[in-house]
Each structure stands twice: as C-alpha cells, then as structure tokens.
Length: 307
Image (tube, rainbow, N blue to C red; front, top):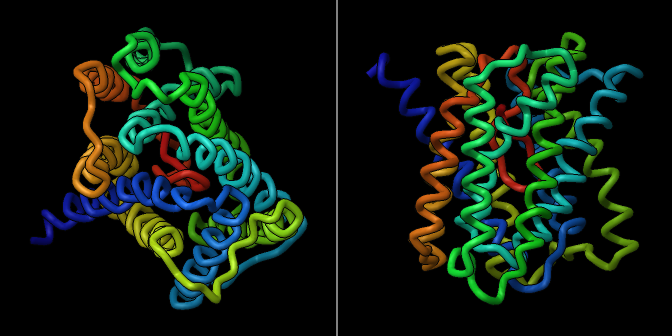
C-alpha cells in the first residue's frame, strides 16, 4: 500500500482537477461571470490554504518582495487566465476545455526558450507540432465542434493556457524567494481576492452568498475546495515521489476532465475530437519537461497549472 500511495494520490489529484472543468461549465451556466466567480473561488482557496499553512506551522510572509510575487502570480496565474477561460466556458464543451489544458506544457516550451530556461530540442518541437495538429483538428473540420460554437472561443481558451505557461517560466526564472508552494499560492489567492472584489462590484458580477443557492454556487465552492485539496496533494507528491513523476498528473487531468464531462454533462464528441485528444496526449508526452519549479499544478480556469 505504501508503494502504491503516490500513484493513488496522483490519480486522485488528476481526478479532482479534471472535475473542475465540468464544474466551470456549471458555474457559468446560469449567468455568473468571471470576476464574481474568481472572487469567491480565490477567497475560499486562500482560507483553506491559510489553514493548511497554520496547521503546518509555516505561517505567511508579507515582505515587499513577497507582495510583488503574490501580485504577479495572482494576475498571470488566476485573474487574467480566469477571465479568458470562464468566458470560453460559456461557449465551449467541457471536454474541449480539458483537451486545451494539455496545451500548457507545449506553450511553456517556447516561452522557456525565450527566458533562457531550456535548450532547443527536436523532441519537444515534435510534441509542440502534434499539439498544434490536435488544435487544428478541433477547429478546421466542420463536424469537430457543435455548429453553434464559433471557432474564436478556442483561441480565447488558449489565452488562459498561455498565461499558465508564462507563470511556470516566471517561477522557474525568479523563484519563490524562500516561500514554499502552499504559502505562495495562498498569498497569490489573497491578493487575487482583493483585486477581483472591486472588479466584481463595479461590473455587477458580484455573487451574493446569501442565496438562494443553485448548482452554479455549489460548483464554485466545489472547484475551490477540489483545487486546494489537489494542490496540497501535488506538493506532497513532489516531495515524496519527485517532480518528474508528479508532472504526469497532466494526463489524468485531461482524461478525467473528458470522462466527467461525458458522465455528468452528457457531452458527446465527434471522431475528430478523439483524434485531437490522441494527438494532444502524444504531444504532451514528447514535450513534458523535467520541472525545476513546483508552483504550477494543473488546474481549472482561474487557477494554476503544471508544465
């Protein structure tokens, strides 16, 4: 059982993060929009992760450098990708959102080259090419997406993948300044909560927690709790089994995301979708790096992702 525990945690973390895709679809199904969702999602996440820090005895730190890090990660790891991903979730099937999440490590490769964090490798270029081919299969054939879905929303969803990939390079390039990953995500969530509250109020997107509650409200709370739990499990896995083993959670996130969408949202897909999924997973296998930073786990819209 002890030897099997890391694999069990890996699968459970992938299942939890995969579930956040259909939950995101549910969260926007009755009119809730990005700023209101992100405020509560990050606020709940900050409370849970703050409790984890307290139980671990690590506490929090708020130096000027720490606040700069929290703000940068809140913007590029939550607020900006959350705007694009929740906007895209209104229009795209949940399964398509899950496939597009697997593009993050592929996008991270050229960004890492620009930052001087990686050397060029033909193997990863091949993985990037397979990922591009998978995206083409989603947008080019007329039968790949529902007829009512404009292709532009694929590119809107990919904006969030770009920001998640950028976040991983920022962390790898400048580090966490002595903070551990749970402290860092907690701090970023606190700052993100402060940023999104006035935006939610000014845009009329604030969600009144007094109810009445419906499926979207439950989905927001469930997303925040699942992300926090999966993130803590991810950090534990990095320390227990190593980053190379743990980064394989990306496969489970995509596969579980598609599975949950079929089971709970009754989504069905064309043969082009399944071909795109196969290409994206193959590309993910080729481009998967040996990560030097451990902040970025695979996530839901408005959260962070491993590269």
